[in-house]
Length: 445
Image 1 (cartoon, rainbow, N blue to C red):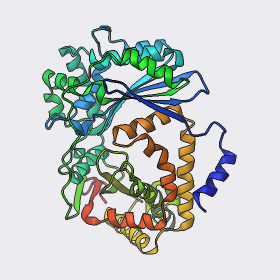
Image 2: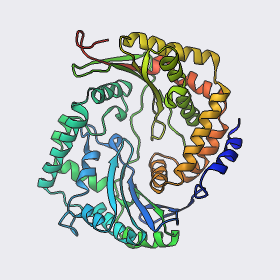
Image 3: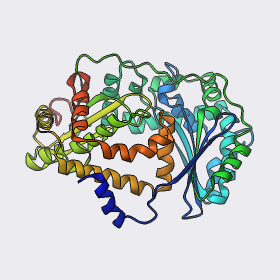
């Protein structure tokens, strides 16, 4: 069944509001790029400001500084000494938050449409007028280190994830955790933070995405009023990161921790990211992940290891293609009680070998394509999801045309395309296989 037929079936079931969004763009003289996504169903708006800087852009030895700044941006500015950013948003009936990845840092507010000007005024203020006081630095450093302790150092799975990423990315900064290494976060000083802020928090390094009950003209007018006067950064570097050399041998990580109750294995492969104007391989890898493990027990790993052989309680696959540089394609297996990690790995490899021999089941391909399309369509009904879709794309080297073309690119993927992508990516010499288990004698498998 081709995706064009599935689209016809879905059109009968999906709400009439699920239609292609009206998207427009503008660029201010200071370099700020603006994107407007019209959604007039309710008088609300999502205001997002994305910076083209993430953990992978940090100076060597200064890991965690991008995430540190996500925290500091909610502190005082010269115009708002009370550091009441979130309180003002809440008092206006909205909510706000922020996020940091390897490739971008983002800030957002969801409010009534008539509060958009206020959100822009506050966001523009903290873009250039943040007060980096020593007290705020130490307060937020403590918060970040506590976050690392709770989310990473107290979780064996998170520690293993850091170890396997460091093994896969031996030259590229994707091997460094977004939250940073503890000893480097502890050493960050005021000069480090000020230099980072002045360089990267600038209009010519930002993407404004506004989705909601607005018109392009009013958004651009507000942006010109609030963001337009801000001066661009004059020392903004090109986003050129060290790349990985050819991988010539498989790598393995054995992470043992007495706190591990449920052992599991993960294998990750270095994989190409989505490329602007050339998204075909990324689309094939996305569908490959769905076929192998992203769709639960209907996938190859789930059906074989969980249902038929009953040697796994959970399986999965993913593809991290929405990145500025090549990232990872991953698989995992959580074995059933009494099944060793080595046996689970052998069974996983057998599934991969059979898939390579037998090829793509056309029925399964039609299923995963229709699911992908449904998710794309339902995503158009979610204002926040829409804004996020465009923000991620524009901070990782893609364009508005790439975003618009993505469903059609997925539709055009053939079984042969998927098998070619699998043969290129799923090579042991490009992989890291990681075991998470308790030490011998302590629930080890």
